[in-house]
Image (tube, rainbow, N blue to C red; front, side, top):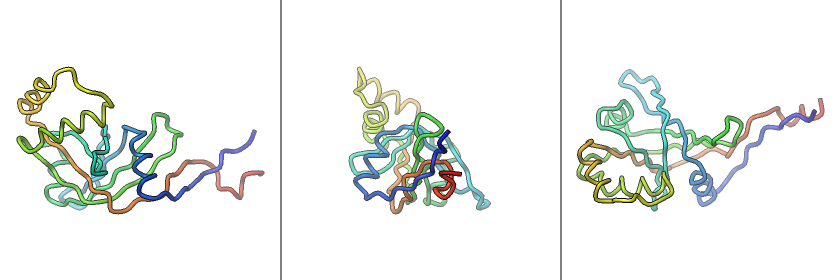
Amino acid sequence: MARRIATNTRVDHDALLEFLRSRRHGILVTTRGDGSPQLSPVTYGVDGAGRVVVSTYPDRAKAVNLRRRPAASLLALGEDFNDAWVQVDGTAEVLDVPDSVEPLVEYYRVAAGQEHPDWDEYRQAMVDQGKSLVRLTIERWGPVATGGFPARLADS
């Protein structure tokens, strides 16, 4: 049986955004107060400005951590464990109600890939729930990668 060979494909910014938009699941990495990493599984989207957006609540660890230290990373994953992935790094901001409401509308559109049946109801729910939005401005990224054996072991 042929071995699956690991890949690392460098991509430009436009190709990165296309790749990120083809996925919805990720791991957001922020920094706890003691300096250790905090990892949060998230559903994300990419807004019209090319930022990674994540819905949350103001008291969740990711929001609290980002208010203290805005550096963050996201590992964008596919539906299957063996799918390609990419890590993006950047600076995040946390928006709270009322400033988060319209960006949460865009988040819904890009994360769900569809329109909500009642936007007024959605907006009110976001206010009632006190929802926040994380926006991660991408400053660097790694290659789009897949797991597997090193190429030198392909025929071993």
